[in-house]
Amino acid sequence: MPELFRAARILPMTPGWPQLEDAAVVVHDQLILDVGSFADLRRKHAGPVRDLGEVTLAPATFNSHTHLEMSHLLGRTQPGQGFVPWVESLLANELYALDEVRVRTELARLESRGCAFVADISTRNAPRLAELLAGSGLFFTSFQEAIGNTVPDNPAELLHQVQDVADNVSDSGRGVCAVAGHALYSSGPGLLRAAKAADNARGLPFSLHLAEHGDEDAILLTGKSPFLDLMRQRGFITDYAAPGQRPVPLAATLGLLDERTLCVHCVTVTDEDIAQIKASRASVCLCPRSNAFIGVGQAPLGKLLVAGVNLCLGTDGLCSNVDLDPLGELAWLAEQYPGVLSLAQGLALVTVNPARFFGPLVPGAGRLGSLAPGQLARFSVLPQAVLDAFS
Ligand SMILES: [Zn+2]
Image 1 (cartoon, helix red, strand yellow):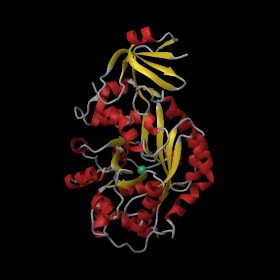
Image 2 (image 1 turned 90 degrees about the vertical axis):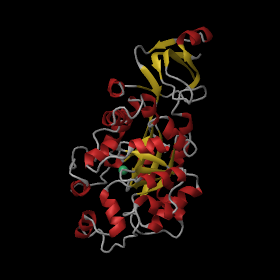
Image 3 (image 1 turned 180 degrees about the vertical axis):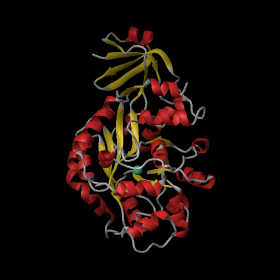
Image 4 (image 1 turned 30 degrees about the horizontal axis):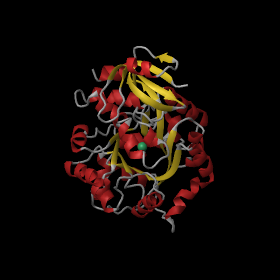
């Protein structure tokens, strides 16, 4: 029998629908049958009522960019000093020592806070993380990060590393394994093209850290930067030929920008870059707390909004943040940009916008992100910190 969930306020995040007061959602068999005023729905549906009280109910959230692999690094990196000091502090740790107990705890915490989707990036442990995600209740994309310069003869080989878990992933019906690039200076151009080709061949999403910090611009334009000096010092690179283009034009030149690409960070983008991203139909994932933690500046939120770029929100990993909760990220963003976003505009970054990006590419993702008949019955209750940040 259908069940009615009543709340003082509901933000359906369905285009054209306003915030509803004294409202309800009718749920049957994990699907939404109806959304509207409690009084109307009570007359139409005789099922049991669960009154959630004086809360604001919203769709479950998406964390569009994180690194679960780095969960053991919480509190073990240098905050606020810029990119190179942060990388140095990162390299002082064992980066890829996956702490499965910690990852399971983080996934359970996310679900308990009303998160329904995670896009995870892993350099060394993607097959195991895909299994952990498939074993959780979350919808997901498990990205295997392609880093370095070695280009396989057949781009599909980039997905082979996760093939042994493909059955578990497809059995879950809630996720996909895909390939991501790291960044334009750390994943070679041939490898990035191959990664994008591997994803395109299977209709999968692609992700890339793009325009994250000033060092990235300097590396690509001149080949002179403190980061490259550090990499040479540590023996990670011997020679580097700067392509002589800024990040966004270079990504476009390499054919990496289209509607299946999520550009992560976009802190140093210019007006022309924003126009180029918009024209490419790529989406952008902001990670504002990570940018502040590392000390690289902030993305031009207002300009990205005005340009109509499809904006999502991610936490990055616990090596550059304090938690993985998209609503914590949203509250922080709203506090940093007072008056720039309405509550509905802000909430779109963690609900309907990522559903627009991942929806055509990941099973079930298009049935999240909004509360409407036929959508999955996955909810979040907005914490007071989010409501206060937008008041
Ligand atoms: Zn990242």
